Image (cartoon, rainbow, N blue to C red; front, top):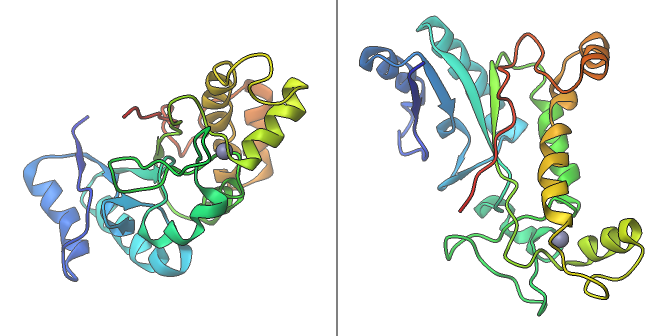
Length: 216
Ligand SMILES: [Zn+2]
């Protein structure tokens, strides 16, 4: 497997031609990022990217390439930056730390999660072979936003910081979030039933490594 990736979009209307170029160079898979680029981040938006992605996936297929869709799970890109106050991770001091000195890290326990899972449902009709989750990633000492504090108290029975730190909460969520990603992507009930029956494996159209996790 030879995987290509282009993690920005400066093609100026020539996006579809990138798929031809991969074929010429000798790649047979693309981690598809640039048709949904949001500066140096990417997250699918049906209205903004739907038609382009459909055309691009068809062009990849015509060139004999498989597709693994890149899905950001760790920052709020420029188009979502205005949601910072409710969707971004917060430090214990209440501040808003940055990743890469640029982007606010998104919090998987905030309503960003609902937005993300709608993105997954929107992707159901698209002919993709797999997805790559770039995250989730947590800030050092864990997120202390109001959504995390509420969930922590609900699940642990005491307030964050009263008995222990955030440490036990993080690996749990790092496993739980990717495990929840496949069902919304699946097109029909039979596939979802199969998932529940056999555990968290990939349906026919998705590659087994459907859930990835990035570090910083
Ligand atoms: Zn949080």
